[in-house]
Structures are given as structure tokens and as C-alpha cells.
Length: 96
View 1 (tube, rainbow, N blue to C red):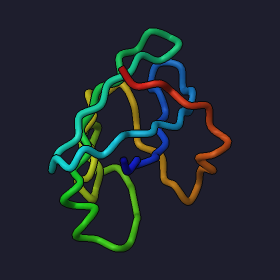
View 2: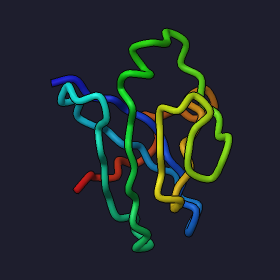
View 3: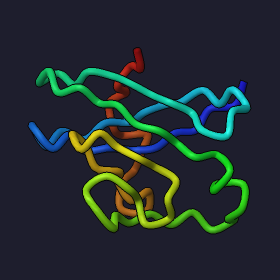
View 4: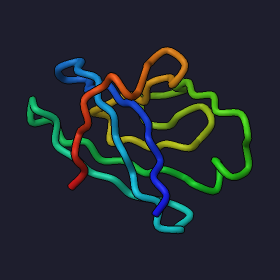
């Protein structure tokens, strides 16, 4: 099974995490986790947008939607720019 790895930052405690989202083949993959500070992390990943774009560039245009429209968050976390963050050095936040 393919896995999509990306980084997030909890807005409550500012801790950065690595998420590993299994890709099931759905156009929209849903993920959920709980940060160590008890913040609930819930979001969507739009795989169709990833397939359409070969350049992986992320930046946030609002509190909930990434500029490239790949991620939707519940507002408790931000998506990290992969070029600024070394994902392998971040601790893994286990998905529920």
C-alpha cells in the first residue's frame, strides 16, 4: 500500500509531527489523530490534486485550506512546507 508522508504543526502546543497516511485509492483520504497536548487533528487529503501536479509546493492561504487545495484541516494544525522541514526527523503521530 502506498503511503503519503507530510508534516504538520499543532496550533495548540506548536509541536511538529510527521504523518504517514495510507492511500486507499479514494480521491479524498480522511485522517485523524490526537496530539500529545490533546488537540484533535482531523483533515482531508485530496489525492486528485497530487496526481495533477508534479511540483510539490505547499503554502497556506487560509486557516483551513492549503494554497494548492490538497489539504483541508479542522483548524487545529498547519501543514508544514516539506522543503523547510526534514520529515524523517519529526516524530510520527499515529493516526486513529
